[in-house]
Image 1 (cartoon, rainbow, N blue to C red):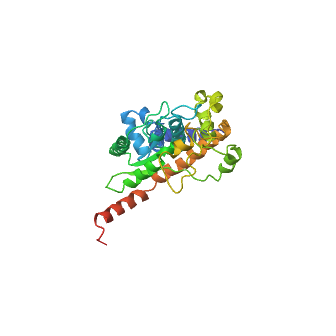
Image 2 (cartoon, rainbow, N blue to C red):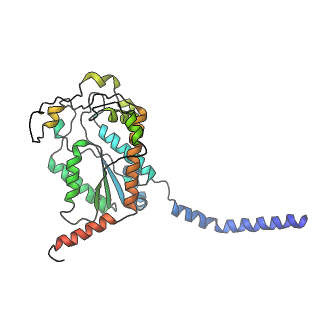
Image 3 (cartoon, helix red, strand yellow):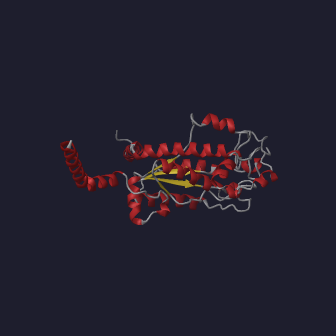
Length: 305
């Protein structure tokens, strides 16, 4: 019995010495494999930690874009920014990426008649976004995802992405576009009550009620009409920039804007999951960069096959 006890003591002593010897190496390896809990918000990073964040993010940065504009009579002017940033934050928690500070410079000429709208010139919008991308690239963030939260930006941002082929860049720009969600989609559809659900409608009101319920004025929802006016319905085969004002002069497009917290949570989680999937793809894949480089080489000498 004493022999067994002595053997156990001897074994435990050896095990302790082995662990003591290897513990520093184990700690170092764990620190390398799992870096310190870095903030994903760019504005919260110190300069030394920013270098670590770029590495951990695989060079991926998300620019969440919003705007300052009226959102019906009940939602804050910065609704698009709140929602865009929230989705980016949720995505970065799932798949680490650096999230750029609030970006409010967007196309919003169609709402200049409403109080609180800040509309910048075309030249400034373009220059600011282009220089922001260049500066991010200069700082090692060469895979740039634009998470747009404002419908009025859609055509502008698609053209901005297309313009990246006009000259050589050492970075890529990808516009995030959410798609069908087979997991959450059916439940989201079942919860929706609105027939018209556009600007400041059921979805936006539900999401804002999750993100910042203190900024949602539910008592004001029905103080203005969100129904289409159809004032250009008789104009055949044409598009004009005044179409939005013709249909929705109150800058409000919804027949039902009552919030549903479950709907809001599902919408935010669904979009964040898809954005996280895109982040992961770009972190682990260089196909976009490779194709862009192949295109540039061929564009330099289009007759040289």
